[in-house]
Length: 155
Image (cartoon, rainbow, N blue to C red; front, side):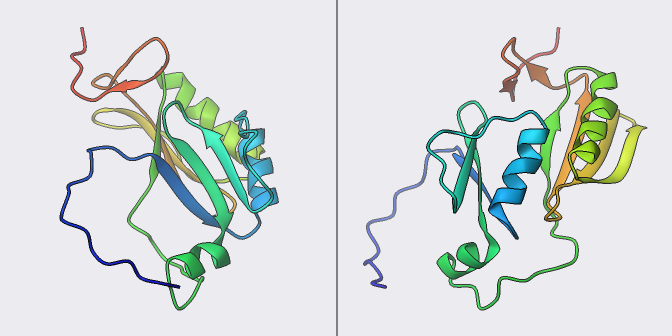
């Protein structure tokens, strides 16, 4: 592997394009996300699966390949990662429905749909232990295509 020289400092644009998850078995993880109702992108392959999330992508590859690419000495890890992926539900009732679908697909319920000070939220883990929150709050503004408007004003 050749390390390239550092170019002049240039700030990246303020956006993320991919969510990359290291998984034990790409094929099994694809089945889980398909059971949630998500469609795998046609440009996926056996070692790298992609799901179009409307302008960005959830990508799955083996933990071993991910660790090797990132020059990590080990592909294993455990404990609380301090990170979760969040799905914003359209209604309070949708929180429990999405959690139930995740469990039916092979995920693990971490916290059932629970009323909070700001709305309704719960958590599940996918088969590889990646934490997802399913959340409904009145303050988040979503357009008709279910895209988030971060600084939108709730009317």
